[in-house]
Amino acid sequence: MRNASLRLAAWQPHPGALRAPDRMRDWLTTEGSLTARLMAHSAAFRVRRLHQQAATCLADEARTIGLPRRGRVWEREVLLECDGRPRVFGHTVVPMGCTASDWPLFSALGERSLGTTLFYDPLVRRGQLEYARIRAGHPLFRRVRAAIGGPEDTLYYARRCVYRRHQGLLLVTEVFLPAVLDLKRPTTQQNTK
Image 1 (tube, rainbow, N blue to C red):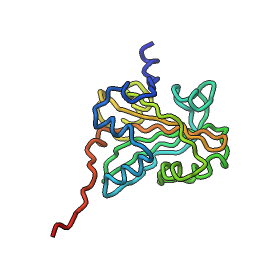
Image 2 (spheres, rainbow, N blue to C red):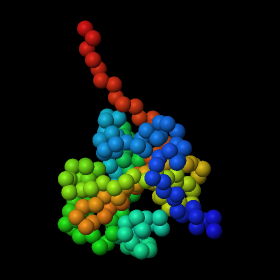
Image 3 (cartoon, helix red, strand yellow):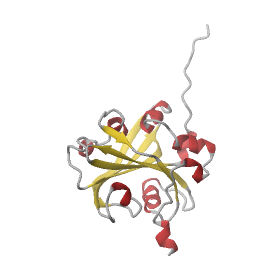
């Protein structure tokens, strides 16, 4: 039974339920586009696409995207890198029933940020953020480790949100890697003469 429970994350409507360290909580509660914030904290930002393909949604995603049980979705996974280091693992699912008119740019994103399309499209409606701790045993934990390695006892903090455009739903999950805490806002050089 314990292994089955690890495949589900306890998604919470408030970040305080995670008891995340203050600096991590600051990243989790980023208002607006996470991509824009990462870009502001780095000299070089990159989206590295790991894959985009048909897949079966995770057990704790089905109900959130309107499916009665686990089913087929379009899945996209990326690493958001700042200055050559992965800082966030992104996992997005779109139900197969969504049409190209619901999410016209999704299939052609390549290594562009999904956030750049979501936050600048006036037809997109953002849902409520949810927060969770991702531990060993959860499928996203295994996927993060496959992408970047790392110790088995790492605890990841994540957030997710459903976006709606026309009748289409899209679920974006962002897993914050410990390296995100190394980012500092670049200081601007001011001339004091």
